Image (cartoon, rainbow, N blue to C red; front, side, top):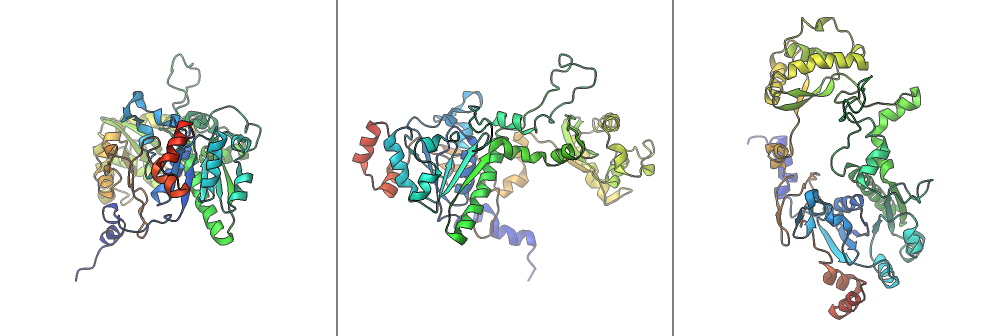
Length: 443
């Protein structure tokens, strides 16, 4: 009998196409998601919902403003594209927390849930009489998770500044040192694009949501050991600022502020994006031999004197990197993305320094990524057939687990779609009671 390969063994156990009947890790956890006007809160509860938690997504009767955030104002059946990607697996109900009766209903729901996620400005829920100190008396096992712009305490905690993704990025220091550098002696009028550059959509919010999701899992583990709930506090800008790890240490130790350096990187050489005939590639050579291999691969071993190079530190200074970048980019522009990738792979077999080779990876557009056979086979872009929104692609199955795999069961729900089911299940409310609450704008 032929021995099964590792790839075949693991595919049978964690390929999303064959794991739908397996149990879910958090299927005994109920989450009340009160996040409002916050993509961070939505991203956090999405992760928990993918692991099987029953997430009750609570919106005001008119719906959450975050539903309307979408490119070019495009709506699909009344919902913005951004929200469609973060509404998955959640039950959507409405509840007006600005009214006392709505807050009393919230207290009743809290007695039956494990986690509450909220993104109101610090002190708002406390002023409403439903802050952590009140709710923990109702449910001592409650995990009360707050995501805000600046945290629950500190000089800016009561700031009116909103928790918007671009503000998160702007205040984190990450965007200060991201983008094209402004050459010495030039002004912005001469090079208007040489300004701090934002990262991709919602990355600051997703970072905050991810940190909180991990914190919630830790708090659930602690509760399993002690029986105690607790309050969690994530400041969005603070979580994104944590990505500045080595830059912070550099400033602490030497007082150096990491400045913008275009596609180059003060952390090492060769480590950058480089232009090609048909786009761009990432080049990675964080060992001297890899940098030498690149020079050899493009036929510059002798001309550049690669054999005499002794250590990478000689190439680390900004002025030196800029000089060498011109030479490197002149070479990469001679080839397409595919040619450079193939050259790197071929060098591992036949190059002077083989199997050492520089890392070469194409910079992919969204359509190239979504057509990539590797990601298609792993199921991340498999369309979900949603009964309301039709066949929709939402990135899914990023975690592959052999025993408790994640899954996308549905994409999203309209405002208040699950009121009847959830209020009956948790509160015992029938149609008449729901009509009464709707009449007075409680749901």
